[in-house]
Length: 271
DNA sequence: GTGATATGCGGAT
DNA sequence: TCCGCCTATCACT
Image 1 (cartoon, rainbow, N blue to C red):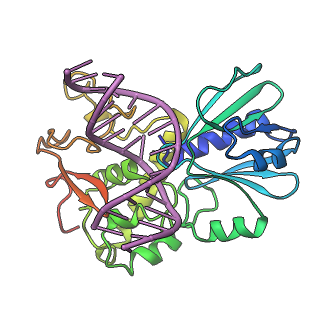
Image 2: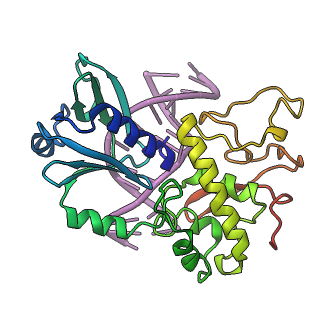
């Protein structure tokens, strides 16, 4: 679930349900008991997202920082909230709704200065209005590292995960192993613009769909296929299956300890 | 029921 | 480069 679009949805959800009013906070599981007690009764001033980081700014100027990691999940519901089931790290409750957080890799209260340090470590987020793609380009254009690795480095670009990086490189016809410094500037601009498009769509839809209308199963006369991760994609987790555009088997390899997927024909080596 | 797997990332080695 | 985190889902028995 958690690439950047998910976190931006969560921020919007928090803003809508809890923004501008006092929240009740508890840690049924107990692992965030002290933090929850400090949050309890405070006004949630603003819910924000930067990359995969959810930032809930509180009245005392501290920020509740949540990172879902690979396991973390949120469930929302209407009050009255049921007895918590499973390991609920944090439960927030407002006037009419509650939010349960399970399995996050981070759930902590941060002082303003620490939030700044955290955000200074993050690259521009395609989903944020204040994002400057040139900041990322400076890193990309000087790096010998493969563009596929750079795209998942949150200090270069904040928000994309394994699905968006595979899909945007496919859509832009870029070999994932191409070193950043060998990428043309216009090619980077196209990748960035496509990330903005895809991720904003992901926020609206709540799932990752990257397949253009002319390549959908319907358009190609194939049976509809929705992948296990909830969306329609070109290459992510389609190893060995035919490329939706050219029919070549999709390739897979491990790169920097993450699974990488690409079409060797549609994503030629030299771009 | 069991086991494999995962959209992430920090820390140890 | 590997390990651990600690939850949900899904394929299979």
